[in-house]
Image 1 (cartoon, rainbow, N blue to C red):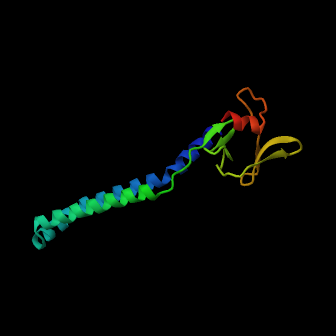
Image 2: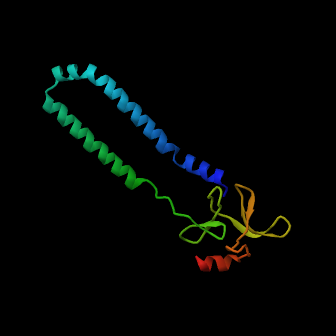
Image 3: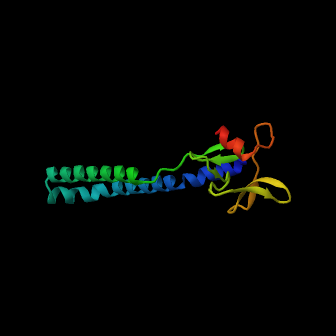
Length: 143
């Protein structure tokens, strides 16, 4: 994988986190700007104990939602790069570019042996660190 592809993968892998951070910062800034305007109206309408109870309840509910989302979210499988192919914990091959499973091993492109990715339409050969071809059975046994 080229350095540019690694940067792109890192960027797109964390774009949701960056967007959530920007939105959180915007909401915080708006709250700080609106607090001097809203605070006198809230103080005159509600006792301080009620406001603190509402804030505490809100904090507890938000922490509960965060824990529930964390527990219910699907866990991503850790893929391990070996012989130029990504492997999951069950020793299934995944494409090193798009990370899709279901690669087909065979002879492709006039005698090129390797795994073919239907999404990328590329062939990835199994090579060791010295560049020698490795058979799928040997690669799986070494995992």
